[in-house]
Length: 320
Image (cartoon, rainbow, N blue to C red; front, side, top):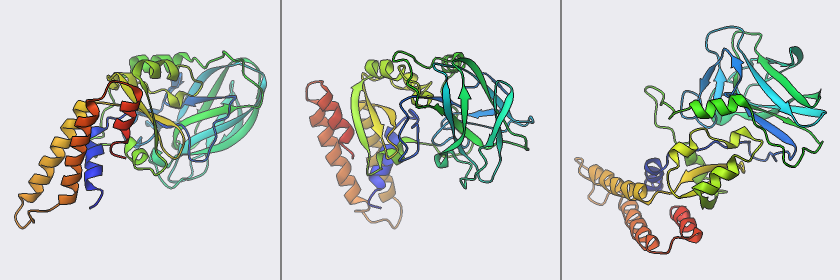
């Protein structure tokens, strides 16, 4: 029970924010572009956004009932080169997918099993190497079987340098971000807090910035997994933390003292409710209750400091 207070605190405090972009140990190639699978141009697949069915770490696409399952992506490539095509996906059992370039099948991949349909178990896997010319092309993912695995993203990487000012800017991605609203919860499912495993990760790091700077920096990327279509709806505070777990990719977290105060109050009420139950000791969860009271005092002291990055860095690490 020693982590009960910490778990309930984060569970009350955190809002669903951004998505991480890669599995642990994988370095993001400098000359690469990463496409979110759910931001397709054309297709007949179902989308689960973060927090919806199966999507407990990444958004994904999966069977919507129409066969063959397929999704197409229009992409403008900055250089002619040999590109390594990698996929981020999860599957309880093997469901191979054919990869097409401009209408021609070039490879069959996505064929391994990760042991789960949940995207927290998604893995990056190299599928093939493709020579592609500079300019507009269409990538199609088509499952020749009954239904496809749960695909989160794919990446094209090359050793050829990209122009320094080139940025990925797909119309499907823009449409998806403009059209998105708050994600719905899975009926009957538990509330999902993707940041919780990151914040309890021993390798967790956090960097504080302003919300304005965060918006500017995350729009300047060739990795669509670093762009959350709802992040700027949810992040309404002046200060934001970029929280990194063991995979090295950041998730944005709004820094909201009022939400933290509410969380602390509710945690004390929760402990008091437990103590009022018949047969429960009067000192039940006393260690956790004392920890919450210390946090409350530390928060009050911290909020009395002048408004600067170091103050909000301390705010993030208050519960670490």
